[in-house]
Image (cartoon, rainbow, N blue to C red; front, side):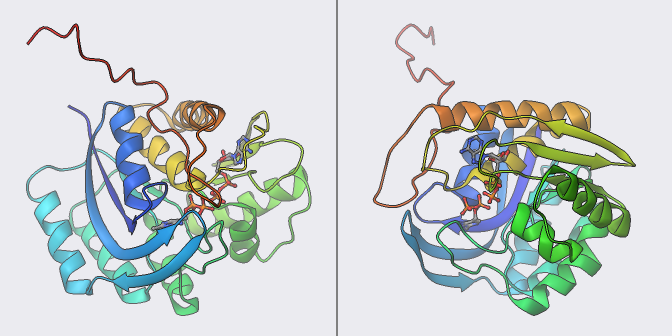
Length: 268
Ligand SMILES: Nc1ncnc2c1ncn2[C@@H]1O[C@H](COP(=O)(O)OP(=O)(O)O)[C@@H](O)[C@H]1O
Ligand SMILES: Cc1ncc(COP(=O)(O)OP(=O)(O)O)c(N)n1
């Protein structure tokens, strides 16, 4: 079975973070493993608390995983401190991890800040150079590139600036656009637009986590980057279009939209 690992924070409401990643990888028939960086007390209306794991314990989780079931791809999500990022980079290097997707999570939809200022510089120095692809949303791409993004051309410029600086591909996500949901991939000097119809659904909690873990699942299966991103976007759009409506704020998507869940006729 194809295997993948998510290194991210736990979302108690199940729509983002580790929970979204495991659901997404499972929906792709990929065996999902996790290394938890922090617990969040969170629901669809906001984040009320964050409890980071000690760096030594994150290291222990990563050693346990890599020495037993090596993942064929790794997704890195919320990592709030520089010391945790340094541990991740050291372990990914040591074990020669392949197909690393880094979602530079900074702020949740609800407005909660999920990374410290010092951690952003460690992210850039230690983790970005190991990544196959980074997946910033528009505000994150602005922070990382130092450019203002107002349209498709400036999304392309920001993706190129980040990608050429850190030597990896960059998917600048367009969920924060108004009329469409077009994302742009910059990879080795080539621009590929992934056009997405804007779905009229206010429940977008965890879209970024879901997209990045779907990309990791597809890379783990051996797909090339462009195809992995295209397939991931298709999955994300399906989960969003399913129209799940839970909670009082920006709710989660239906990660299981394509799974029947009916095993009555299964012969065992
Ligand atoms: N309303 C929407 N309709 C269709 N796709 C969307 C919508 N909102 C977000 N997306 C898609 O979800 C993915 C995550 O994007 P985005 O919301 O920008 O990331 P983040 O969750 O990190 O802020 C992207 O592929 C984006 O185009
Ligand atoms: C534990 C945890 N990790 C990440 C996020 C942010 O999720 P993301 O999909 O990037 O973005 P939003 O959907 O929240 O905009 C989170 N909330 N919790």
